[in-house]
Image (cartoon, rainbow, N blue to C red; front, side, top):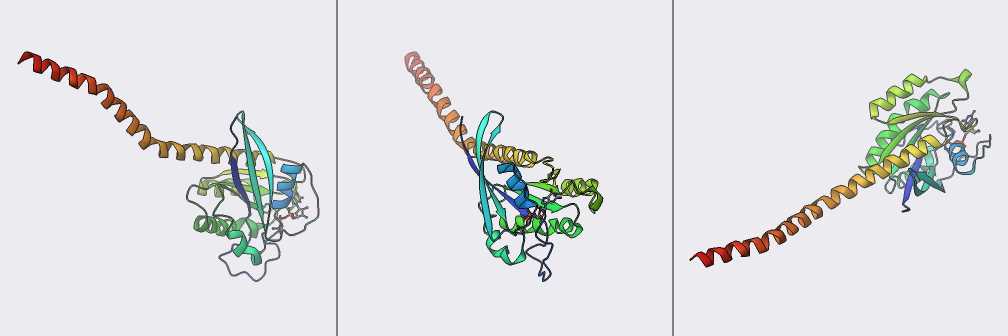
Length: 223
Ligand SMILES: Nc1nc2c(ncn2[C@@H]2O[C@H](COP(=O)(O)OP(=O)(O)OP(=O)(O)O)[C@@H](O)[C@H]2O)c(=O)[nH]1
């Protein structure tokens, strides 16, 4: 079994770093830390302590029988940490964009976050869209259809989750890890393709070699 270490960044889908937002209350609190703790420690704490800068946790996943050790970065949703958190995009292989289904601005700002990711993350980055707090149906402002539409617009997989009730917690992480592994293997294939072609060519030459000599030998003999 091979082990591969990947970075997955959980990203808030609230106020975007490219927007000069002064009022940032609500731009954090979509539930990134709670999702991460629920996934890695199977715990849920109903209080909100804003993440300062970044934090990370490790977890080993079993993806189709292969053990994959993932490093998951939890970035602060607050505007004031944007310059720090953006730096973490560069090394990420996958990003989970999170909004809160009871907070419509957090949904609209997914577009800003997606733009931000495009600007700062590597080209092959894999992304997933998550609408969190699905347990709060009575306060819902963003329908599941709207979430699906936005995900389809960006060509992303979409999950509604609840860190509170444990709904769909492992799915986004597992799916994203699969996407990262698939992209990784496509990349390896692309890198190895010229080498394969070269080796094929070389072995063909090797096969042709003695035959050419044989033909030449025959020619010489017939003279
Ligand atoms: N009902 C409900 N509340 C949730 C859920 N997930 C998180 N919360 C609550 O939302 C608040 C904020 O959660 P956090 O995980 O700290 O939010 P965050 O996105 O990490 O915030 P920043 O670190 O400031 O960016 C907390 O009071 C949580 O209890 C959920 O699935 N359901």
